[in-house]
Structure formats: structure tokens, C-alpha cells
Image (cartoon, rainbow, N blue to C red; front, side, top):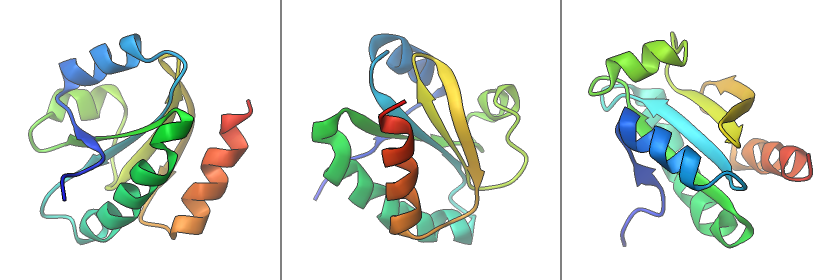
Length: 112
């Protein structure tokens, strides 16, 4: 089964955010070597599948390949996850958390 999340470069992320101003975007900054990032990936995939019909998108940015983008977003710890709408950062979290945490995060900001 194909990933429900999108793997984007820094330029693609900028374009995606411009092209989807009303979407709630979960942007995961990760690295392939990071065990916490690896453990979070299935959770984010499940969220992407469950919430895509409701206008929530999950995008992934590999910090090893997109170092400048990670610096631009102030990423210092992996994984760092942003919640973005209309090119504005609404929230930021660090670390792998349970599905229920991310689900409540989405619900909190979906109505904002």
C-alpha cells in the first residue's frame, strides 16, 4: 500500500502550503536514521488516511536531504512536527507520541 503522506523537498513544501491554504497540514521533519522518527511514521500514515477526507494533509521532510529547510523552521530535535494552516505555524511538537495525542491535536486546531 502506498504512503498516504507526501514526502516533500523544501521547495515542494512551500508550494504545497501555498496551494492548500485551507488545509490543516501536519509537517513532520524527520531523518531515516532516527528511531523515534521511524516509530512515529506508522502513526502519521494512519492519521493521513483517516483525516485526508477532512482536509488534513500529512507531509514529511527529510532533514538530511533538506538541511536548509530544517534550519529555516528551527528544527533542532527529531522528530519535530508542525501544524500549519495558511502558511502559518499553529503548533509545534517534538517526539513520537501516541495516535490519540495527534488526533486530539488535530481536533483542537481543526476548528480554530
